[in-house]
Image (tube, rainbow, N blue to C red):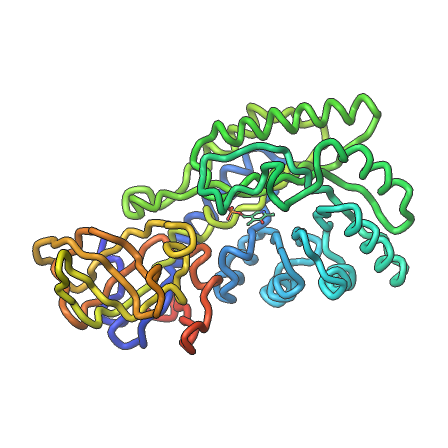
Length: 386
Ligand SMILES: *Cc1c(COP(=O)(O)O)cnc(C)c1O
């Protein structure tokens, strides 16, 4: 699969940088569309925190997707990239007044509200503008997910959402507030989830909650199940697309939707993860006492996932077909956690070789920082390097 990279072009661009295979991105979007079209009432909002690169956003908005934002800045980026305001939803435990006002002024579809104090502030700010804010309640379903502890979000111990025991109370409060319209329930149990079982457990919980509300004659227009579908970091070449078919079917089979109820999804990683690679240059190959280090010019400031969540990214040496050797691939940052992978087999490396860290399209460029006074990595698409 090395041939699919424009390696000659890569040599003309300053490393490190992100490369986005837009053919794969379009293929992924087409697959999501064909799968969701089967059902009619499924709507996908791309979670833009996964990758807010303007070129990526434009492709996703042009494909007709909505957007899921977690800050006012993200709402701005979405509007700028052509997402219609009425397809934008807005979550987050700590929305500032500025964020909320921006959402109200833009006329977003709804706010995913995570606490009673937040609901009261949205009511007050909407009142000052003589508007009615549409809100959905993010319920913490106390459902675990088989993923890294730092990316589970649906357990009672996590900071996200409103406790299930407060659900009816909060809906009651909403009904009493003049500038609030209650439109739905929202859930998001975590990220990089590969076991459909985890989503089934969420479906069962939602079924229970809906039954509970129906006994009180409370109607819910839409159910938003968040995102979380994982990608295959081990096999980016063999499994470039996540199993969307299974994923959407799981909800069809397990979730009891009422007639006319709409089902919203907020997919991030599964949309953009596999289309991105971090391209980096080998600076030095260093023989240490017990091992060999490949020191590259990309670091945790460009791709923090390995340092932050012990995440694995498959690496290819695009410049060499020599016998594989075992290396630790590390960056130049002054932190011991600035390690991309340990004891990994790469075609024999030399100074100047170009490496691709695969599956880096989600939570890569978006999480980059300027630590050590480093320049932020740029992102280039297939078209940019054609
Ligand atoms: C991060 C996030 C998502 C997207 O999660 P992925 O695992 O990237 O699909 C969806 N909804 C909310 C509320 C989020 O915070």
